[in-house]
Length: 173
Image (cartoon, rainbow, N blue to C red):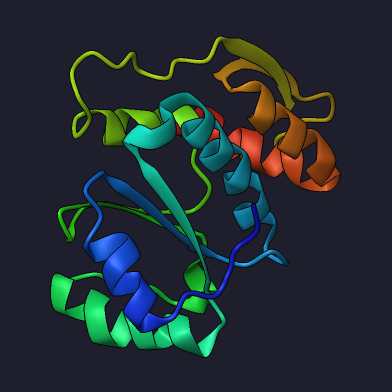
């Protein structure tokens, strides 16, 4: 699902009034990091189904800027179009966590899981071998990252961006 426009009124109902935890992603379809994050967001939706709500806001739309001004600043949340994607976990209208940049589904799941019913299993994808190219490394090296099939699909589609994201994720885990 793509990043989309949401009116401030709909935001108040869909995000702030939600009865389940909300993973709010602010990004754009022309941002490579945002497209990579979409794979992780899809994996969360597939795994947790009706127990969470994933909302993707188009960062450059005037309504999103109005939402930031009207609802998010007063909750201590800020973001810039220059720092997307931004992922915010909200529970009961309050921000519980804010992450900048593309993150693996496993990391997002660990953040969201603590606000879900105890009987739900944590999303824990198996390791996938990824070749990472370093600045001073001609052949690169192979590392195992916990990626879902949807994340792998998105990373393969992104082509030239895969090495940079994989390297960033490898050092984050």
